[in-house]
Image 1: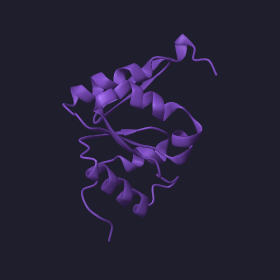
Image 2: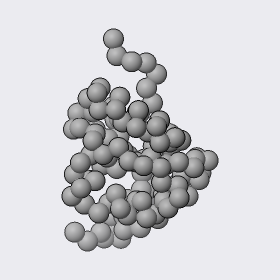
Image 3: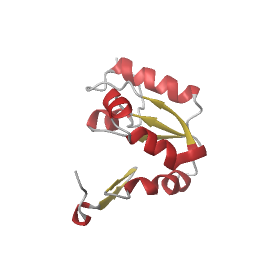
Image 4: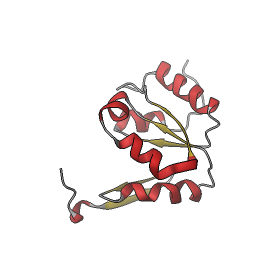
Length: 117
């Protein structure tokens, strides 16, 4: 699918920003630095990680800012998957999370104040 210039956009809201379009990935390093982060960690699902080249393209853009990936987020952001992703990100020394994919991955990246009862 070709990306038409009219389909390029940027949405900004606290605490996230969304870029889309042919050159969207080029903004990654500047966004990581804007947050004063040095260890950007990617959260995605199996499809993005293993059936597309998107993860490799993100790694290439981030270079030394890339800290690792959790590629096992399930479609409903289950508590076990969120816990596992959190543990992997902490072990990698992540200071910023980047969600690649749809709503489940973005849901997992929301700040969590407490654990479920």
